[in-house]
Image 1 (cartoon, rainbow, N blue to C red):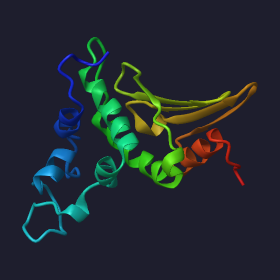
Image 2 (image 1 turned 45 degrees about the vertical axis):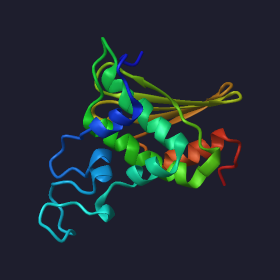
Image 3 (image 1 turned 180 degrees about the horizontal axis):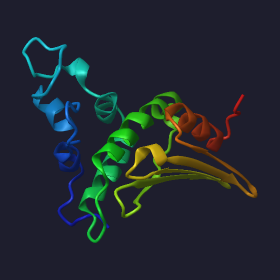
Length: 176
């Protein structure tokens, strides 16, 4: 359960990836710039809008994607559970953009849960189908699993294109 003081906009604004040379956060985007290491800006160390991660623009353009981002970031407020590792959150946001853009209105927000060890599990269900993405703290050990009745499969160390393909399958589109 999310913390009582959880506010979706403040959760996104308060997220920082804590990575060296990390891209700016949504708070930085809303304030017009962020200090960091960027070779493309006019002032040394100031990020320009073109440097922002794609997920920030999508967050502002799409309510469903914004709700997904807020669900992921709410895991930082969960009591009694380890918060997700910042590299896991970064990977999820960056890898979800392709699927959201290509699936457009057919994209569904997954159920988001913590693995209580710094990782995140995403679960999409539709009719009798299920797709699960498990992204542990060690993101190179991630895997994607899908099931329909007794038919199932999986891919280790999957990327954004595999996620998109499986979410198309979930929606009943062919995998040709």
